[in-house]
Amino acid sequence: MSPPGSEAPTVRLGGPARRRAGWFPRLVVGALVFAVLIVGGTAFRVWQVARVDDRRAVDAVVVLGAAQYDGEPSSIFSWRLRHAQVLYEEGVAPLIVTTGGSAEGDEFTEAEAGRAYLIDRGVPASAIVAVGEGSDTLGSLEAVADRAEVDGWSTALVVSDPWHSLRARTMARDAGLDAWSSPTRSGPAVQTRETQFRYILRETAALLFYRLTHASVDTGSDSGLG
Image 1 (cartoon, rainbow, N blue to C red):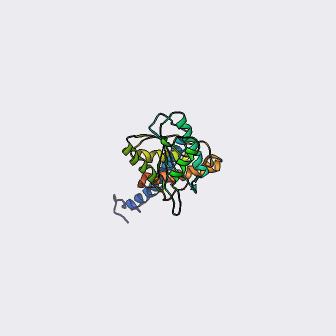
Image 2 (cartoon, rainbow, N blue to C red):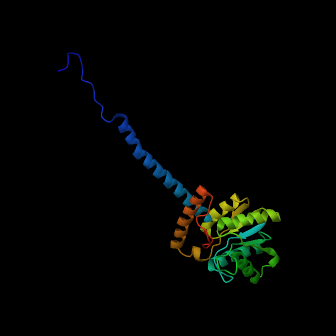
Image 3 (cartoon, rainbow, N blue to C red):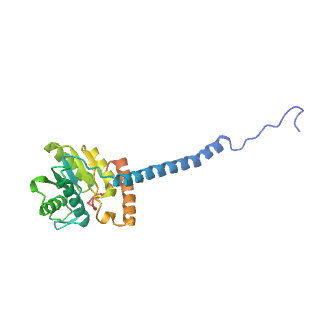
């Protein structure tokens, strides 16, 4: 029994440890919300830039390479090349730059196959430069930037598939080019909503990886999405 006028001390269970434990779920939720915002915002920008054709007068139209088979561009690549030809014929640029290296065992680079394809379609050979270095988008654009510095030009309109445009434009600018994008609106990459959704997810992940590492998500040409 306590003496008169005294009170039993209050016993607090948990104390600081309990308060610290309460912060952990909030931290986890906050991190998840932040991640969702980053991923969602990036996916929105991939979709947004894919819808914009930023064509303007530039020094060169740069066509990103894709698969070629014994010198014949794949369907994805040929649609990009046709779009570049339209831009050239509209007077957007006096020069088309084809890009892309070769896989082991290939006789032709993607850049060479693209150049031959455009010449067959009536584009003057003097208006086409093939830059056949690079096994992925980043390597190809860095090689183009090096060639641009040597040849004395700096502005470019990058042609690729819609969903690839934001990452390609970002890489081109990081390589030192004043770059914009003019995506093709035809071809396998835009045929179905399922395909479009898959490409948007892939490009969102690839762009986030690039922003974190300044490296391509993979090596080797993969329809120009490396």
